[in-house]
Amino acid sequence: MAGRVRSHPADGEYPAQTLDDYIRPEPQRTRSAKRRRAREPQAEVRVVGSVDYVLLFVVAILVLLGVIMVFSASYMMAGRRFDDPFRFLRNNIIFAAVGFLVMLFLANFNYELIRPLSTLMYAISIGLLILVMIIGEAAGGATRWLPVPIIGQFQPSEVARAAVIFMLAYMIERHPKLPRTLPGLAFLSGIVGIMVVLILLPGGFTIGLITAVIGLGIIAIASPFFWRLAIAGGIGAAGVGGYLWWSAATGQGFRGARFLIWLDPFTDPLGLGYQTVQSLFAIASGGWFGLGIGNSRQASFVPEPHNDIIFAIIIEEFGFIGAAVILILFAIFIWRGIITAMRAPDTFSALVALGIVFAIGFQAIINIAVVTNTIPNTGVNLPFISYGGTSLLVSMAMVGVLLNISRYSVQKK
Image (tube, rainbow, N blue to C red):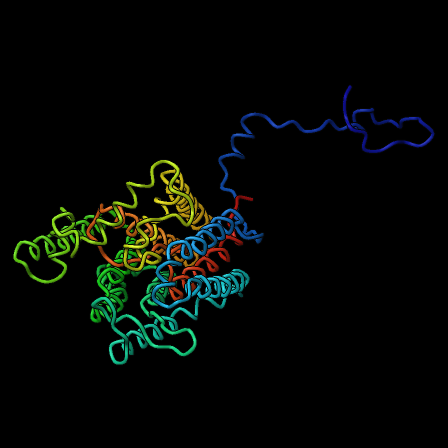
């Protein structure tokens, strides 16, 4: 008789009770009991752990590649223009180092303080965008930068994108009925619209468009009317395309001309199509394995090769294999960001994580599409890799918040 003895009588003699009174068999779970237990709702517990090291490693690799490629793409141009081939390398190393410090600080920041700072960040961003229209510096047909001592220039539209993400997440968590009603959707859209208009007015068309996509994407995900909003977004995208087509057909404005030259950049290879043509030459000459680091030919011809067009220089120097590595790294970033959002402990952190993935992932897609002439040429840099202090700092700060969120997860008990 198998069992577990619960007590033992003295002197080895059993009293009047039978042996079964002292031996209790282990209760056996039946299959039906196990099935009932499996059907019972499991409690969710909040687990605090370490940051997502895969995400951290991917960002570190992208930033390191950016530092290397900025130098490789710029040293000839910087030597001719400034008589200092290390000018952009030096600045980029400084911004990358500061960015890593900011990222690590925000990854360990008091998580509960992020929410109330959302409104303040949004208000400051509006003030900075208004200030750009008053004292901003113009370049490339747009006024996007504020002059700042020591660091030179600061681009408030980069901060504005992050502010929209945090503000929307904060309002949706605090008022969960907003994305469920028409007035609520109008209110949330107004939060996005105000920022987009302030970015567009000085000439930031592409950044404004990206900000709109990020904001409306967050609203759509939080709303039960996702597919209706997706259809509305598709109609809006068609409207933008129609506007560009009309501008091109009637010869109205610079964007219409860019749309026309996108269809065949070789019709004006020394004018509006120059950057696209040189970019395509760089891609074509890269082959499978590239010409080798520092051996780019087109970097001498492409204007500002260390900025928006840097992906073409990567392909020229590292070939198709190098381009595939960059694409895989961004794909891993998006994947880990989505996993972080899915495991987030609350609505605010989940929407913030998704917004950060939108902001960085969508911008990377736009940049690569421009470089390969998949869409009309427009000015947007490649996150973590292109030269640009404000973009790098803001992107790494957002990653710091994403890493912070990845430390907290909800798991089944």
